[in-house]
Length: 129
Image (cartoon, rainbow, N blue to C red; front, side, top):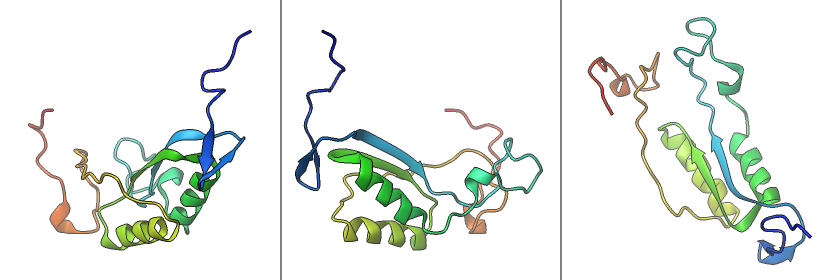
């Protein structure tokens, strides 16, 4: 008899064993409301999937609470904004979640109009990984 991988695993949700579907990892990106060079149909147009979503963090944390088991992880990408970081950390704290690791990632694409002009990426013609 074939058994699915992980079929005998017990999943804990808020410290209680529940027999329901669960995931180990959720990856989400906070929509920053900016055009995406090379993806946007018209210059300056923001793709539908990158438009601001009211209560994004609330919906994302709610989704995680429904499907992410206690030993799972949320990998959340969000713009470099103190306001957004405060919102994210507030929701995590209020829902008894914790940050295990925090990374800063630099996007090498030319930004069309960043929130802060001092953070504009330019002169990347000689950029190599």
